[in-house]
Length: 212
Image (cartoon, one colour):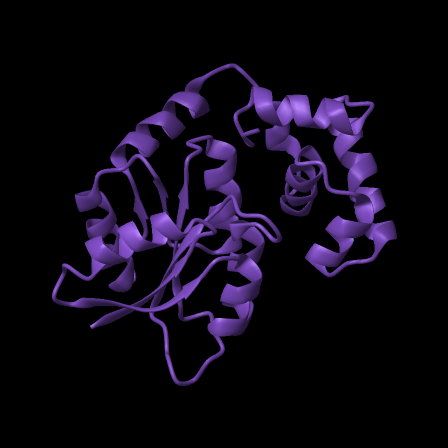
């Protein structure tokens, strides 16, 4: 029996995934969280051991990428399947670097989600065929997305800044000092040729990394 945690800040999304997953005889949803912070706490509960986490990448508070890193730092055997409405290869790259075993678009077919769960539970990596093709097209393109040059931590700070969070708020979320966050902010602005936080929001919107 694959014991699964659902992490998404939308109740209806979790309900839908739970109904789908528990229609399979060998899968059970044993825990749910509406934030990355709560997921990091629940995963430590010895009463409900978890084999696999289905994680939304775009939540308020810490992102799914940051939650993935924190969870795997303490529980390296857990498999994490990232979900997002975005199909941008930047998200795929950063999520993979964080240690996730799979990445799916929320537009993927239900059968693909079930297949992904089975594959990564066996220890195999999984990427939706459509996303593979999209990634390949991006890799073969001459269009250089400037966001690709951001480090993993800079990308995390960039997304929070683009959503309008302050340096102090980001520092608290990422458990780093405001000065460290300020350094990341400076580097992000330099690399993306941005002058203001509004510029960063526009860049994120243009690249479909956030939604208003």
